[in-house]
View 1 (cartoon, helix red, strand yellow):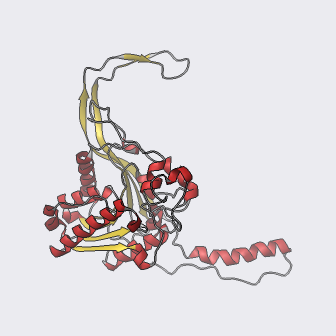
View 2: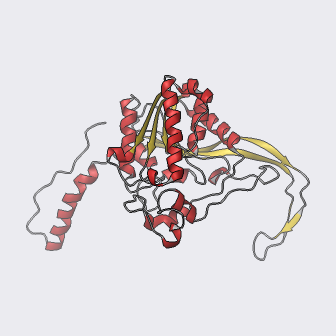
View 3: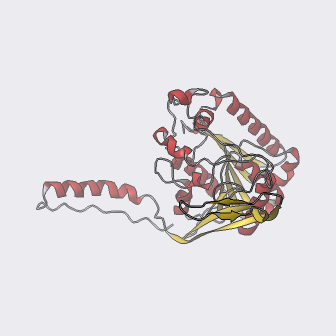
Length: 354
């Protein structure tokens, strides 16, 4: 990257009014700090859908529906052929590419690709943080989430969706102090999650199905084959799809970055994954929660088995690096840029950024 342009202070003319002098002094103090952040320059952006199949519905009753107040009823026949199980993908390319391959960001359960965009309290998310540093970035809404759309259930998707209450992430993602803490809004002391914006976070939650893993894996694998080779950055449930896609096509995965993975590969996956560098990041307060302690232990066992098979796996507990207070949603936490820096440093050390 060329040297950054820095603001060079000049003498403040004595003829300025006190108010203008104060404003100029403030600019002199602020602009140099802001100049340290690389500019956000984009050469291209867009979106597409990938994957999916056709499904036919029969035997449903035809009915009349009024679509708008005062409008005439229209005849709705739900029988016919539908396109389902597709996946929405959004991409941005930097003006000056420094990442040797794109970053594919895959979200966790009950969420969409918006988790990587802007934090609930309005700060920059990882999408643009990495874009500023010369990475092409791809965000996805997994099958049956967000802009990927739904399919009728139980006609096509043979189950009802699962919905998350407002209390669920607060108590389960190590933001609150545990079961019942949403009622009192008691947060873990020292949490980095922006609790004042928690309601904005819950507005992004979407339903999820527990019977669409195969369809999601297929769509992610197709994405990898279309835009790869790539680095996959996956959060929680997304790690399951990342490991499966890597097993299906290991030659297209340059590295895996798993953010508090909750699902892991099977023993037969180890040989396919042994040539892929893997970084797993874990936040704070894990030892205070039996569920997360168990998840952490399963991950440790899987990565140990992978290393024993000749693989490259590094699990980092952020508090051990004096990065404290992170919840399960570290990409949204107030120190999300610091966590992103850990990932950036790890990728650069493996020759994936120049």
